[in-house]
Image 1 (cartoon, rainbow, N blue to C red):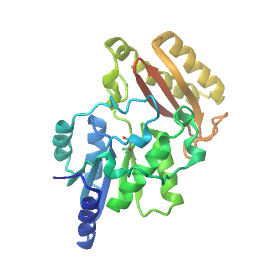
Image 2 (cartoon, rainbow, N blue to C red):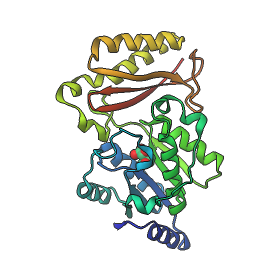
Image 3 (cartoon, rainbow, N blue to C red):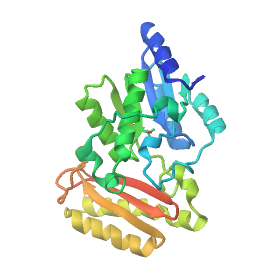
Image 4 (tube, protein in one colour):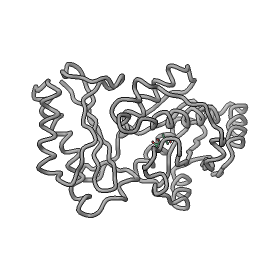
Length: 282
Ligand code: PAF
């Protein structure tokens, strides 16, 4: 596995592969790998002849007061994991190699980016789209892999790819969960033992809504309130950011579960802001 830090070198390497008739799969990450990242990488490995994994804690997607400075990092361990998962290149640029001091070009999907997580993180998805587009342009990957745990992110990236006619296919993978249902995230490291003990209640609440929907409850407001009541009892350390029911592709609010709908949430537990989601089927 090569470790590349320069965008130019990545672009040249991928160009050489293309010239030799080899396709590239891309797995963008911010590092501090867990089994969810490993799943994305192993899946990407099977999709193309060459696999590029990017490891870049993208400053553009962090807002003021967020955890850019303290975001967990362990480059040595991540290098070993990426290699074991079959990456041909691990791209680890420095921030100033990706963003010139006077960087001023942004990619945004504003209608979708303002919903759900975007309510409290107004510039987040603009930062995500911009860095992901740069990675697409550098790698010219035929396919890129994202996790479904950040449902909004993959939905926005799909829209960006469609709107800009990017020649890349997007594949998604389900969240990888602990045995108790808690979704893996690099930010889980922020949790105290007490917070970790309550954390599985996030997904249990979503599963409860899914069960009620499958038993015929179609009113999104009722489902939402049922989850909030459950969380009030079983997740007292949690502080709600949002819990919403939305169209899985457009992310527009849904009031009646007439077709499969997304229930998505963000909950603060101590220092961690945790996101999760589930599909509700009528
Ligand atoms: O999901 C992430 O880790 C990041 O948002 C991504 C896609 C790597 C862009 O920085």
